[in-house]
Length: 343
Image (cartoon, rainbow, N blue to C red; front, side):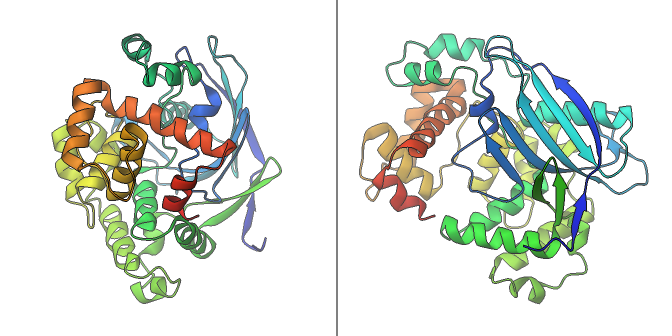
């Protein structure tokens, strides 16, 4: 990794965010199941990440200011407690940011990290459940989150298709080094995503040269759909869940399993699990039924089980059990899981 394309972010401003209580900083800001990419870095109590945030005001309908999006470096610091949470956010930028921009940035961070989520009813409903109760207690205040934009999330899903995690990491890094921007802030150097328009002049053949295979076609087509305003993340947020599903299925290469993940992670629907990928099916079978991952429970039976047991909280319940497994992996070797990850 060279520094010749490194942008140093010298302007800094501090924001404060008060999440709803209870709140678990580390279990929210660090998800061990997310495959490692060099656009973020976590250590207990602190999270660094880059962000490309547009120069418009989403709540008022996305009025363009005629400026390119800002590339930001963000440092989140846990400055509160579980019951009295507070997050200090240091925002690094190349140019000084105005108050309107910062207000909308703060609102977006609250949205992406689910910092206003009320977990009271969920906690009360399942705190005595033999399997889920101890996990809720262990990770009290954990939120589901994904720090990326819709476009970035889709790119990550494309990189994860039909290959080992190790290869996904390698392909993602190749894309960063060719089309991303290396940012320097707070003694960290992290990569920022490119914008969809940056790939308009890139040919599919050039992308294939990065050894990403058929994914080159997917990336080109998806990028074009964003550039041509066929998809707008903020407009989709205002749609009903069924409308969102229909819109997402219209995106090139996006199928039912991908839509399920997008509805859950990007659009914050915690009520229903509607599709399970073969990889998740293997892990769920072992996690919930102690079944050999190579002989998994059928998808229909798993979906019925989640519906019956967790009702409208099924995605949130599965998230808690799933994350608990991956946190365990941080501290102990789990042979059956390692076999499936192949990092």
